[in-house]
Image (cartoon, rainbow over all chains, first blue to last red; front, side):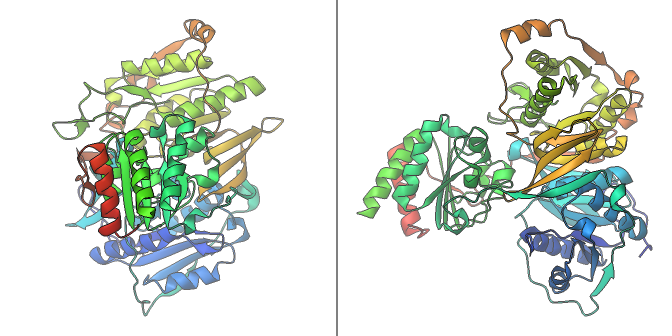
Length: 341
Length: 258
């Protein structure tokens, strides 16, 4: 596992392994895991290296088996009661031990709240390069070409990385379409050894809580209308409710409205809240920062109403109107009511 | 605390194409850091904590520090040197870590990420370089009596939250909405004039020019550009009445979702 060619020049890759970190929550492997495996396979094929899925948790045999069927070369499993919950110290320690032994060239994680915690922790300890929040990762002539967002997503940046023994990358959720891949003939399971004790840890998980799901399950709604900061005042949210009603759908919001106490968290769509995939998603006065986008970009049809023509929401929308939502939304409500008749 | 450009205005890319034109930019405190400050001020009110602001940025960043001091922070340290410019998260963390090593702290608070470069790395990197425990995306915190630990609630995503105890000293990255943001009062603004803003240069940090700014960065910015417009989005033009009608028609006939 240690036979690597030293990297040459900026962005050039060593030919060690490609690792991806699987994530599981509430007994289910997160969608991002399969996105990472698909992108990981692209990279490992391009660099002719092995793809390893890394899984940490407690009593995760079933997940390990699922991962083995995803076309990876190896499933590296750290199974311990100390890893039952996401504990930053425990997860870092476990992965640092594994990294010290194996030294993969690339470690790909999801740009989730877990990935955003682990990746800089590992990269800092190893003094390694980390490109976070990647929108695109390509291997071209043995170099990593990376695109990531800046300025709230309004701008994209092409970046390259200083070579390091292991390069860390976090991939934005939903940018890669997961592809099924047949199980590799020689796919093996291996054990990620835990060599620390609970007393070594400076962080201790007490337990989990869940935001009240609310009465309407937004994840099951066919049509969702959402409002964001562009609404200005709390009373203006009525426009969103009215449009939702006229279209026969549900309503939700982006984070700022929950922070301002206009709605409870159950209505929040985004990285911190719900991920929805309705037939129709109408975003009114929402700029489209990535934390929100990752929660709705897979809707079948996305409509955006925003007065800023450069708002990142238009990058994921199928239809858009650049205009004043206070003019447009009432007109849409009228049209919707006509359709009902 | 970082000062960043507001993004709800038109942005223009300068040539060479690796930066924005600054002439029409409006700057403000990074929203996440504003919440980190609020968390610090709450600790000050509840436990008598002493609050120091650290900002790495050019002269205009002093505005952010003035507001922070007016809100109630006790003093500020301004890291201002052209050598620090165009730093990625790694180079930024390097500078901040070297200063922090000379200070006494029980808790270091940062925002989850900055809205301009959206790395989300500085807080955790500082923690590791200083050998401290950390917790990220914190939405609630309670200092334990005795001051040796802090209990935090953090987001895991998808509506799931985790409650964790963290040994101090530690770094916490603070999520939006943890508290309501306060406004600086007139008294606060007046008192702020008496508070110290210490300005530090590269020489004070104890790093060489190659270790900071663009040279000290591990992520090299090659080019910035606006993502291709409407690569799926059909922008419906026309007067509001027309546009609304056309949109609803398309949703019904073309997209078939109504």
